[in-house]
Length: 316
Length: 210
Image 1 (cartoon, rainbow over the protein chains, first blue to last red):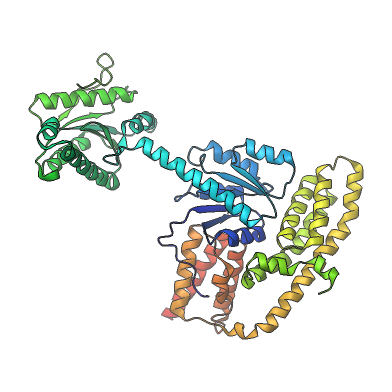
Image 2: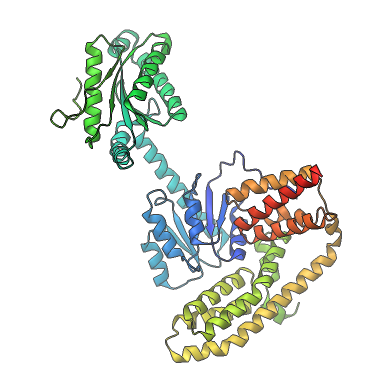
């Protein structure tokens, strides 16, 4: 045999096997490589490094007794890190005492398998935990995405946006926000029906999603015909240029063969502004001004002031 | 095989467990033989220092390896030492561990000899395989694939790289580097393997331009 199996298009779940004894890693890898893509590590530190690297493992098989950093400590660190905390861990160990098993499970491990490993039992347990993990991920995805456009939803925005604001303040980075509202959308629905309205929103969603892949931005369907775009490392001047380009792109898009336009409000995080709701509120008020000004235009929000800061208004 | 030898090493169960994968079997046995001296030394040093955490660690590791390789007698004595080191505050246990050390060393050596005998017999029947070789483009492709897998910390099965130990024998330094690469991959020393791979690629490109 002269070829290492190609890695392209390998969509099998990834399991990471961690054991300081190469012989154990070899045998476990052989058992599981037919069903899973197997990654390997011989220390706790390496395990943490691989767990933090994309694509992340779907499950970790972790030995307990290892030099320097043992399995319990490795598990603890993985569970404390937000990026790795939800990866299921199964301890695979020669420690047969009940209190060891108890300790492992208390640390957040999903399961505990004793050596020597019985292949059929281990595979069944691994499969169960990978399936549960994938289902949980799918549910999370559904909860944070808009079903029609596939973009992130309002819930996601409100969950991450305040972190983005805090991070921008901490690192002294620019942060801007565009609020995009499709003009006369009610007329589209009334004239052409809701199905056509959905196609318009869906195609607009596809367009924003492509922008998301190209640039450092987060596009969100905020509600109805309203979209929010969060631009990291982007100051007001740059955001204004992007907004104007976006307005022109939307104007020439012709989703469902209809001409549409959008009104866009822009706000950039200002000095002293620490609340995402204020930033959002300023962009929202700028959209109202754009509507008042005749629509299909870009309006920069009023500068932030502590007295005038008001959260987002509810639109009717 | 006699009954006593059978209890030293249950070869048939191990073979079944690894689906008759001879390349993997050889890797496992060589790994045990290579680590034998270090493991004995480590246990003796820990015992001399009365470092019972280290005794426990070494005994536990050897127990694990012996159980995976079905080295039954070694597994048993390692397990006894591991259990005793857990309660080493008891002076009787310390004396018991001292008493078990010669048995541990004996079983390590006996198992290693059994493995060496097996490998020796395998080499005799596989001498024709020593001439196996691959072309340079195939070698380059294989090395490229290994590079990707090393970068991703992906498992590389021994039977997929065994050919590197027999090919390009006409180039001594390349052959040495390829064998070194196989050994490092089999021990999951990815950093060292990546460095060796780089050296091999340089060697090949220099050979080409020369």
